[in-house]
Image (cartoon, rainbow, N blue to C red; front, side, top):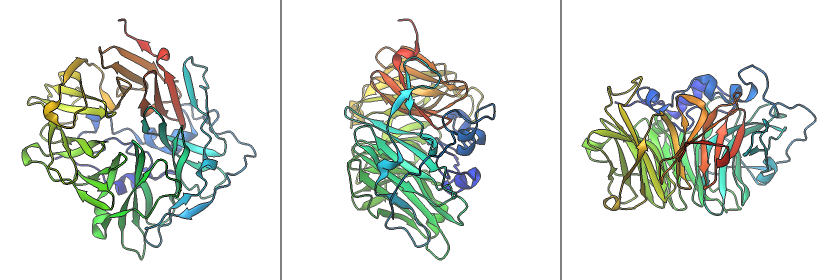
Length: 451
């Protein structure tokens, strides 16, 4: 049986400045499968304070710890509606003051490399959360004003065509109880997040919020997901988003709930023989797809008001590392697994597969791209490429061209490690990294196989 830590235990285990913002890092964190997925990274890797304040030498990261007489951001805040008394999460009414989207040459002078300009007013952690289409690139980060004695975390969602879409400030980690905004997601035309409130004299509550990327009036009160004892025992741990739909993995339990309009409900459970813990959630329109980690790892799909069924599976192997941009699908098929979980080398053979996205799995035409040797962490698809961070070397990002399987690699500066890919375009990839850095790397900076 696959087990996962709940969001509550993740927050407690971190004990961090930016509570709940990177401990799970969007990856499966259950005990049994962590080694296979590359999810169970050490606390030094996932602690935003350690991640931000010091590199391997223990010295502050250049540009991120600059002192000086920085002016505070003049931000106006209002309470996020719908939360129980005692849990005060605020949303900025003028969020553009919190982030200037400017891309500058990378500090090490690498050719073909740009990064989001640092802001000396803030401590910052970048997240492997993002979205890209023909008109915009969106990303998320967490930061706190250096001048804020309480070091209250501020979650920020921004898009290159719209500036800062929204920003939300949560109480300091030292506050008794739980009052968190996490997880969050960005997708085609919308974003979503969850809140979790367990505070004295109030009924515990989880809520889901879903809003347009182009909205200007802030976020409404959201929809109650759990109340009472259920809010203490289960929480969303990953959110996937489209303009119409927000879907969330619920753990413990390993099932999927979907929010559309004013209705939130769990998807119909799959047949017992193909059931498994939901991981790696994606949404295309109203169509929800995810990996089910059971006796085998299969790709399932469903939607509100529809049956849950198998989207793609192999009788003798696992289907995992799934990603889609709504046009292309790509995934990894692993064969000859010598044990259930935690194997030093989990598969005897690993292959990359792709197909054009189809709503009906009977129309799917899978095509083998190539055999793989790398062990894969969280993956993304975009611009005709499949990309991932390298489980064996967190300084390396790997891309595969889906048309012919050609492989390219890019190595981060040694004082930084990859948190994950944020988006992939036709000519570049965005990578969230340690030290609060968001890279944009042109494909010309990659080392490509001959061919």
